[in-house]
Amino acid sequence: MNRDKARTRVAAALCGSILILASAGVALAYTGQNLAPLAKVSLQQARAIALKARPGKITDQELERERGGSGLRYSFDIRKDGKTYEVGIDAASGAVLENLAEGPNPD
Image 1 (cartoon, rainbow, N blue to C red):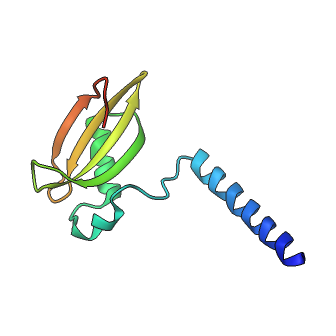
Image 2 (cartoon, one colour):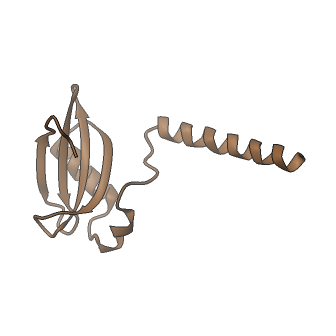
């Protein structure tokens, strides 16, 4: 019984910590992390490039294989003034491959 209470307390503390980090805007993970060893540009560098190209708030981020550039790109959804933009950054060169408003059917 005491072990169950301890587990519950630990789980509650972890959930609280995750909520605090999430509300502070700290990115814990992103889709495609398994591809990170193939990238020459880090996630942090790609985020900075994307935000320079399209200032706003990053709401989603992923590293994916996609045609164009080196074939490996970071894709960011950036929200600004009620509109969402998709910004693609080549994971090898850091070049901006895409910087467009998302259409009615975002992927």
